[in-house]
Length: 274
Image (cartoon, rainbow, N blue to C red; front, side, top):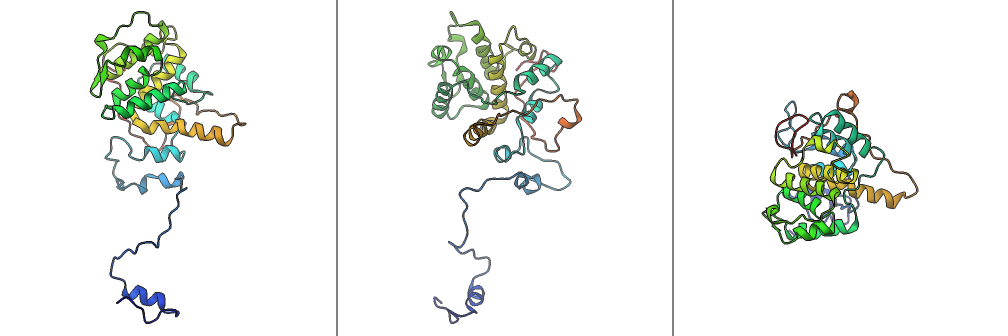
C-alpha cells in the first residue's frame, strides 16, 4: 500500500507507524552532524563494545586511542609513563621530565621531515610498526636519508650496506636508534638515552617520539594535530605540555589503562635495549 488513509490528519504519524514493518529503519530520516567531536564522557570504557562489567579488558591495546586523545581523555604524560616507567632509571626519568616539561609536543623536526615521512610511508604502506618508527627517525635529516633511500623496502632496511663515513656525530645516535628499533639490536640502550653526552637533546626528543610511535601507532600523532589546532585557535596564549610525573607519585596513576604494546625488548633494568 503506497497511500495512507489518514494523510494530512492528526493520525497520519500513527498510521505510518502501524504500517511500518517490524525492525524497519527508514532512510533519510536521521540527522548527520559533520562537525561532531567526541567529549571526555563519550570515550568512557562502558561505551566500548569490548567492555564487560567486572571483567578486565581483553585487549592488548585500546582500540579507541584516537578518539580518547582527541577528546582530551588521555595526555602525553600517560603514554610516556607507560612506555618508559618504571624500567627507566632515575637519570632517564629526570631527563624525560626536563625534556617534555614546558616544551611543545611536536613530533616532526621540520616540514621537510613530515613531508618525507608521509611520502615514503604511503609508498611502503605494508611496513610494520617498528619499521615505520625507524623510518620516522631516518627521514629526519636529509643527509641521513640520502644514504638510506635506496637501501630499504616494505620488508625492512639494509643497514649493512649503508655508508656512514662523514656523518655528523649528533646524528649518529638517531641512526643507531632507528637500527635498534627496526632490528631489535643493542645499538643503543636506556642508559645511553639518559646520557646527554651520548644523545643530544634534539636526538633524545626524536628517539622518544619514535618509541611512542612504535608502541601506539599513528594514534600518538593526534597530539601533533592538537598542537596545530591549538596554535590556530589561540596563538597568543602560551602552550604548556603535561608535566612528566614520577611513577612514585600517586596522582600520576590514571584510572584508565591504555594497555600499551611494549616496543622495547631485552633484559629489564637500566641497561634495557630499545
